[in-house]
Image (cartoon, rainbow, N blue to C red; front, side):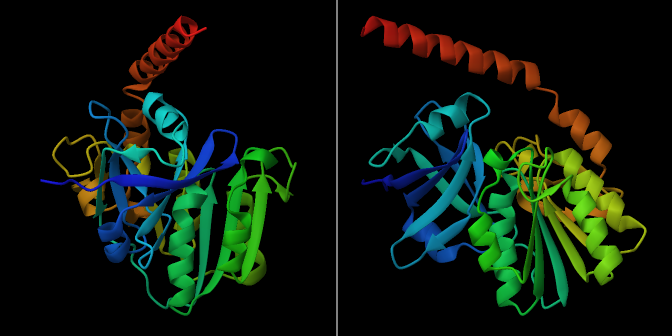
Amino acid sequence: MEYPVYRIIQTETLAPTITRLTVEAPLVARKRKAGNFVIVRATPTGERIPLTIVDSDPEKGTIVLIVQAIGKTTHIITGLGAGDHFVDVVGPLGEPTPVSDFGTVVCIGGGVGTAVIYPIAKALKVAGNRVISIVGARTRDLVILEEEMAAVSDELVVTTDDGSHGQKGFVTDALQKIISEQGKPDAVYAIGPLPMMRAVSEVTRNPGIRTWVSLNPIMMDGTGMCGACRVTVGDELKFACVDGPEFDAHRVNFDELIARNRTYGGLEKEALEAWKKSTETSDCKHV
């Protein structure tokens, strides 16, 4: 029996630690919608990693993934090149993003979250919305997909914490300015680090602006079996991978979520350090 080969066609460095990969995955490319993700494995014994499908080309049978090297597995993935391949690419998974003709929509991407918000902004624009996008990062070097976001937005605001590019400040500062100067948008989508999404939800709570957040950062298995992505939404227990990844931001228990997301931080750091040491030892043997 022949198994599909998920060959990497092209890689591109977008920013320090952030890489864009174009991967052969014909079935996924034909079926995916905004908000869907895939589970990938880089090696036969490797960890399963959920990655949002940033874009696809059904005719060429390719999908685009964007990865930030943080832990051991993401470092391995960003070290792959054209001609390498993934062992598995499973998907499309998750519920598609709720997209409709709301009117005016603000799409907010923080850090590598911009890669996740891009296909959503694109779908919202196609649906007839006026799209205002906010892209934020710590510094200029970490701003990604600026041109792509501009192409699918009626207005684009870029913010950096240190003021090295665009407006100095946070994405919440830009959102508050839009609300005060242009009035309440009809919807907000925010994707990025958990604290950022929580901050956005607090800005939109009192004005009563419907707000969605994507809980990709807490996923592991991607099928609902491991239970690692449990999240309290209102008075219900949900699984981010099968019930989401998008949820009503005003009903998500962010305090619980952030605390749970830190549970394995120490072990992840240990795994990365052990992998780096083994890699250095292997390199030394070939000197």
